Image 1 (cartoon, rainbow, N blue to C red):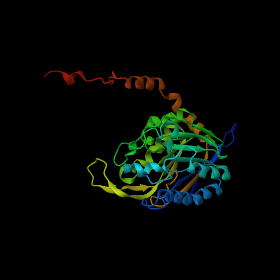
Image 2: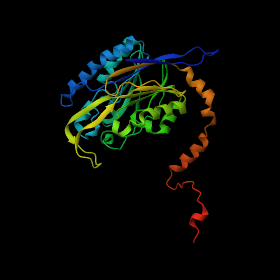
Image 3: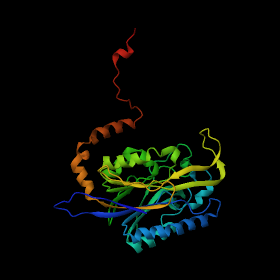
Image 4: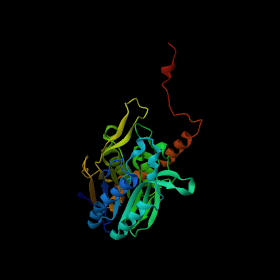
Length: 336
């Protein structure tokens, strides 16, 4: 467990808005060959002392990692892993609702969702559980990767919930799930809707993304004047059957190493040290949400942005007859 603090300047007309926020990163608890019910229950039991530690430390908002109830088995393309999918008010939500109510804590729970009202469609979803144990809402992952072993589109497609911001007892929060962090406009949209803290629950491996990991969230925090909590799972998950992903690599039975390194970033460009690459961990930080407005006033990014110009370009770009605005040097095409 590590703990840090972000401060803001003292204001004359507003008191501090200090919120204590926690991130949990963890490995799975049992081998992937064990019965699914046992795997899920073991993860539940593993997280209880970590969530208890967060609650006992006075954490107001806690975020878990992407698809925390299961191995990140989407690399395999095997449909048996769909059994881990559950409804929004399923077993994991009921499990966390008790803890949220016990500790007066908002909990973000990223799960594999089964939408029984729409043909049992699966989604990669974050459930927002309020500090009274109520379900505030949900957000479905906007961007689905198609790179390397990230075969997630075999199971679910891009979400349909837009860019919701959830007003909680402790501030306005949003969830930019995993691959969405590679899309600057995704971060922007949560900011335009008024987010003060954006969580990025992830499951990503070292070979692919680790050089970008400390950069993207920090840039987003700066550009959008909000705090970012970045969470990544830990460990190497080995699956029963070897698989390939059409990238020319030999068949293999693991996705690679999930490198943890969870951290917080602030709108003033500061950030916390990261949790370990190989260990479970709980990261806690106090943050004064007044810093969001103070940085907006300082830099004026919203005021100086040209949203009308961007909207015009994007409006033309999505049409079939779009032509890039390229002005060529006439001498490039002059006959010799």
